[in-house]
Image 1 (tube, rainbow, N blue to C red):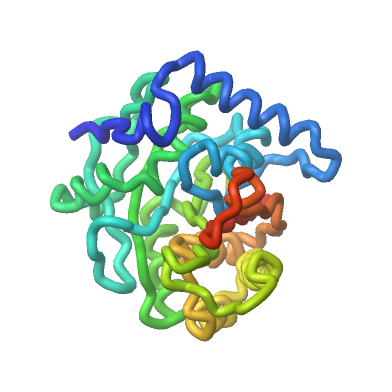
Image 2 (cartoon, helix red, strand yellow):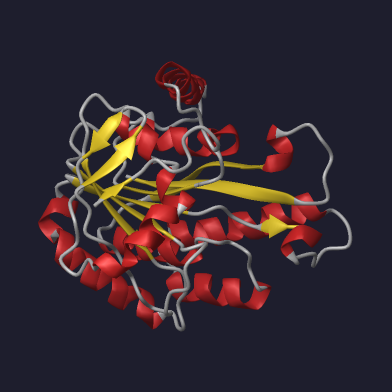
Length: 282
């Protein structure tokens, strides 16, 4: 059971040279920023739009020293398959295809073949895979989905179960790292979300950064309440909360490495836009 590179050639280049250039240029841009904190990261929230939009937000994690990481656990929401609340699911995989070759999969103990189609179809899992495959050493990858929580207490339960499966000592030693795949607010009539009559980009920025800082600090109950009260369109809030919870328990320090919207990337005016926040934990 091989997960194919379904979005190569559409959401990002399928050509190796073009893709390598895209990745290297995005990382070089990050390294030129004087505010970038150079240190190994063990936890991250990264965007998952097509790489034209998301490369800016993905690159900060991969610009760091990841040489100690032997396993990367990628958690994403499910955009195409309905999942039960409070349920983390995965599928046994024999490998993960990228334009740079095959990544080795390290499956969770409770992976089930019935979730293969959901794992295969999910773009939120795929956008970071070319970056992983471009590393000089290739960590094994674990792919899983979680879309919704019914209550904040369930976040800790899912996090505990995941830590038990991957091994607390592997996380503490920095050999296993976690990526939560999430875009932030989807704003405009296209998304059925227009709470602000004026100044929408600034108001959305305030909301997204407030949530980002709650995640940085592992304040899960407040983050859950914030998303509920705002009727948030942050699509990957569930994986982000799981990673935030685990990072907090490992006493990792988080910071917002980047924030921007699709309006910052595309010059065409649009009433609809998507926001992207990059959160990194040491």
